[in-house]
Length: 127
Image (cartoon, rainbow, N blue to C red):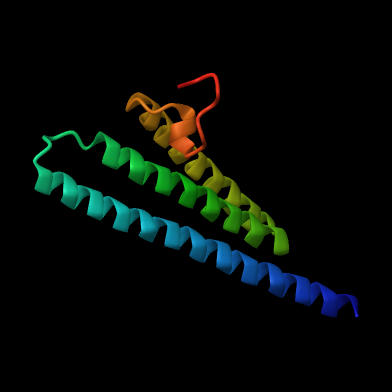
């Protein structure tokens, strides 16, 4: 009986992992669509060469997608934690965390506050 319950839990977690991975891919796809539309508007309106706001928008989508993909990897490792999977998860987590860190730095360098970079509403003490 224990093996049956364990199998059901593993199957449920695998389905959840698949859903989270798919959601991450959808976030990237949505970001690409939003950026392509914004880029087309930008190029058609002859606003000059400043693509900063478009890059910031895409970075927000990528940051969210990276978080979702990391969550999917954590789910995958939690079901069958072998040392091989744990090592791969650690490597992936380091790479994705570094990418996320540098994306956040770039967002801040472009002039977005941390709240704007994550899409959070502005704090009351900030305009």
